Image (cartoon, rainbow, N blue to C red):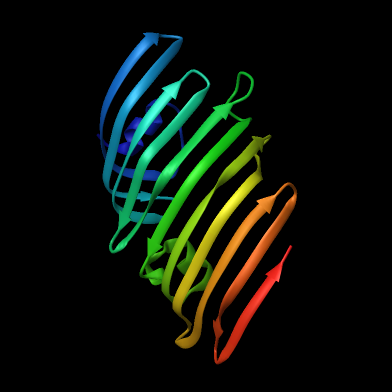
Length: 193
């Protein structure tokens, strides 16, 4: 099915297109359905980023939606993980998020958002982040975070910048950062809170 047509049926204007297939089991009552199954999409675009294929398992139960085993493939790059959202109250604008996401991006030049903001950026990246967040009145506030990022052979406008690794964790309201790398010909090491 065409993703734009499906989204218009539920009055959604999410910037997503492509061709999708789903295998869903629906139970419970009309006013309070439970939905479980898998969704796949191909030849699509989400937030201006073209993708070759995407898939994930979905569960929806009253006040909670969860996507697990998610994978998005763009050329040689892939991202995936799991995310869940539990609403508070009667609307979906307020709630709690849990996530565990990772990405392997061997071609940064193919990431549409980076290209739009930074132009001629190239190199590779590996990313991982897990944590919790609270959504309230369209604000996204991270509650807990543990993440790593590595950048390899990064160039900008044809100039070699270097490579770096970053680790970030939170403890209460404190953010702990550790960075290591090589920028131009200089070795970098830093820690901070």
